[in-house]
Length: 193
Image (cartoon, rainbow, N blue to C red):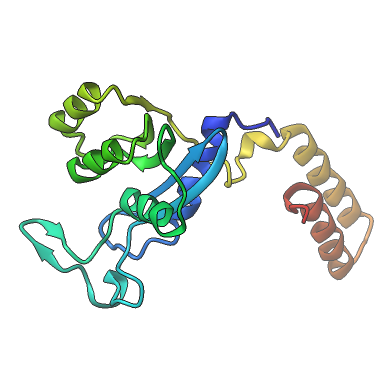
């Protein structure tokens, strides 16, 4: 497997964090990094101990879920809670930040925003980032966690298919073939611990 770039590595972390989201409208994750070290992470969801959107639905006022704390805010608040400076840090977000998160990012002293997906990119947020000299860069993210067919050699699969066919023709029993097939699957799809 090809080694991930730093941007892809931190964006992967943000996507992993997003999998913890309790929002039913959009799952978002954010990772704050300083000197290539993760200092905080967050996902969009309810306050600690509160009711989650996944349990009772979103609480929408003026088109916005007011129950949800955005991923960027959760990550920034985690830094505040545990005394970790965000000055000159970078943030990796699965989606372009909203205006409120944009302002919080600027006020926290974060100097670079990397995002994977465009999502209601507000021109005013873009203007604020420029005014504050915050670097904003789109980092497209391919899901590295899914095994893609092209990752497995077609020649290898073809070889095993023909081998199993020959074994079946030679009278090898279905149970033994099933066991051998399971071993072959382990070669292709098992992940080391």
